[in-house]
View: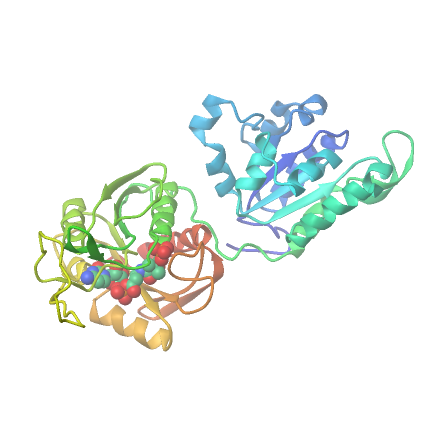
Length: 416
Ligand code: PMT
């Protein structure tokens, strides 16, 4: 992403949610200014906003059909509202009416705009506009305070003449000033992959844990939730790839456009990966068991009369990643591994990169609260021969976009 003084929002995807106030007409100009600043803009409107301006005007200015309702099956088919919420790097509500601020503050999801704001993980900015008495009302003051306490950026309002002939604080900040305030806040940590960045490529992703069965009731497993791998698969699909997701036992929905193969054990995961190849890219995000019981006991293993301890006889599982990386017949242009490290991250990651003949390795910093296994967030550093990139703490969904962008870059840089 090239951010220049003239295009301070270059590369950012902004979802503009337009509320139902007279200032809605200024949101048309805001679309133009956001685009001038380099942003890609999609618009969602409340029912009230549609009383003041037409969706067609926003379509003409943004280049996308404006979204007006949750219940539009054609629009949902093109891009579901959850996808739209995820698409956005930032969500900007302008004008934000008193009613809309109240509904956002209280987590309502009773129309398209509030649902999008609740479903997104992107930073939210609101530009209020309303009568000055409504702005000063203790209810609005409390609602704005609540939003600020959650990290919402509040832009304006300005003090001055209002539509109804009165004067006071409540004017929507001018579009140029809104753009300047948005540009003053750091852009999201990860740059999403450009649409089509992996077009025409087949990508195999592994995710989640493996369960190694000991007997009909017990297994050896680990704490991987699959969230990281699923996020990577979803992001690769959004970037245009044909994605096969080989998933260990997890409780997650299949991302749109992804072909999912469920497995349980490391051996099954290897078979499923083999069946999914050849491919252009392999991304091993699964936490595959390193050991499995030598033999499965068809009967429940019982406590013995005297034994205080129980030794399990375990054997190594196949190293799927190393096997895939060494295959000449799999057509792979890029092989990506993951590693969970608590210390000496760079050294250990680079050792694995070399030992397993990988093109890229992504090291999670585990042992840091709120990252790694199970959490919705992560922090990671990617290493490749001659380079590295730090991904600061962020939701896994956003880090996955950054990783997919890096994969696309590495593919461009050095074909395998
Ligand atoms: O699933 P989440 O809760 O979202 O958590 C995400 C994660 C922390 C599990 C994920 O980001 C991650 O780091 N996965 C790799 C976990 C790990 O420590 O793997 P490892 O160091 O044991 O293995 C390194 C690499 O070899 C991994 O790419 C792994 O998929 C692969 N491997 C390991 C063993 C094996 N038998 N076969 C393999 O392919």
